[in-house]
Length: 171
Image 1: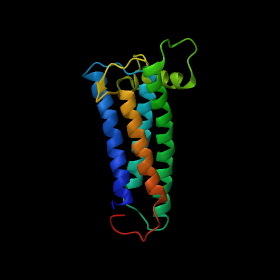
Image 2 (image 1 turned 135 degrees about the vertical axis):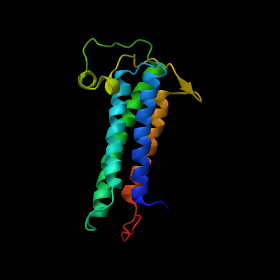
Image 3 (image 1 turned 90 degrees about the vertical axis):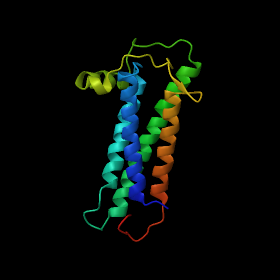
Image 4 (image 1 turned 60 degrees about the vertical axis):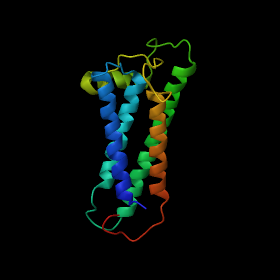
């Protein structure tokens, strides 16, 4: 069974790779990211940072299990938020015929617009949330994102509920 630190490192690396993939889609393949895509990107960055911090080697042995489990719990909660956002976007893409955009921006749209002003290369949103321009194996990007968030949640949950063991070099 892989160590908890290896699991957290894996989530962190994959999460940041997903962000890189999103940047590739928007910059190279010219697929416009929407506000919900950018919110998911923010959540992936948060999960990646939480998990990479949890994967750092321990400074002291006291409280290390608690620290890693706390970071895993934060990553699990963030993953659940990602499941919600990706589910909503998937629903918009599959079932919403008419969507009202920009009439009265929500708090998260305002956050995305502010972040886009700060770091446009990372957080610029100029696409429509209901537009699913790319599919792989029958799933849109939002649906693949939903799958990834669920996997991150399950792995984080497994780290949280693991039985306490004596800390070893690779744990």
